[in-house]
Structure formats: structure tokens, C-alpha cells
Length: 199
Image 1: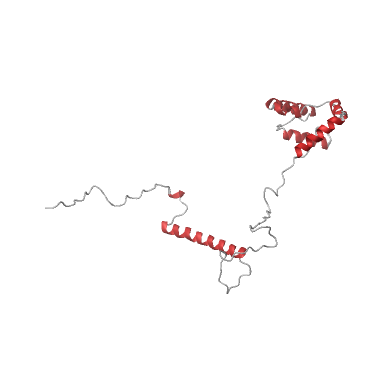
Image 2: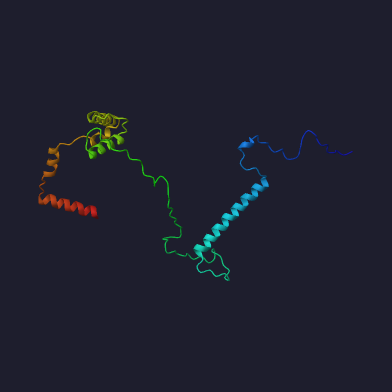
């Protein structure tokens, strides 16, 4: 008597059941079947491919007649447009409204401190640049606040301190009036050095 196969009812040989996602229905934006979703994706891909084909025909097939059967892949010839420097399309957008078109509000220059408008504007610009908050109307207190802020910036970044140091007028004059005396040998050596560098 031969052995016969006996199926184990506890072991299922079919595909495992698909996991059920427990997602809140309020979070789902597209409620369609998977077949409908695949169809929409395929239609989108076909529409984009048609747009690219039309663009290629426009850019690479000059003077295409309707009776002529050809395609851009076998008869490609770039058609240069009058307003184009290359084959990439350049589109200029004119924004009627946006961050570039809206001017930043300029704070009116305060005349309370008794300063001329030009000086008051410069002081306000420096205060804005140094990130100084509400300031006193007294110009001396404002200058002191600016000096303290500059000193704190110098303490944080000492490598920039030399930009703020005032050079004496005498040192500038000495640099401008310094005379150099070269002998003929010095000039000849300099010419030889420059010729060696050039070759």
C-alpha cells in the first residue's frame, strides 16, 4: 500500500493575507480603488510624454510638413529661435506682486533729537546695523550705546578690531611721502627677476 499525501489543515499554503493598515479615514485625500489610482498615474505619465514629444517636434523638426512622416530622433535638427541663445527655453516671469515688488517700509527719520536729517538718517542706519533696540532720544546716550556695541563686537571677534582702529594722519602721510632710492644694480636685478618669472 503506497503512502498518500495528507493535507495539514492548520497550515495554509495560499498567499499570506494582506496587512490591513489602520489609517484614519479623515487623513486619506484620495478615496479610489488601486486600479483607478494606477489608471490615473498612467494617464498622467502619458500626458507628460505627449507634452515632451510636442516640445521636441517644435524644437528639433524644422518646416515639418503634414505629409512627411518622420520623427525627432532620426531627423533631428536644432531650430534656433530669434530670441534664444541655446536650445533650452528661457521664460521670463513678470510678477505683478511679490516680495520683490513690495518696498520695505522705511522708518521716518525722527527730528526729536534736533539733528539734521542727513545725520539722523546715518545714526539710525548704524543703530539698525548694530541691532540696537529702542534708543534714547538723547544723541549722546545713543552714541554711547553704539560705542558699547562696537566694543562688545570687538571682544567677540578680535580679528576684526583693526578695522575700527583710527590710524593717525601722520602715519598716512609718512607712507605717502616715503621715497625709495634704487641703484642701477637693484633695477637690473629686479628686471632679471621679472624676466625669470615671465618664462
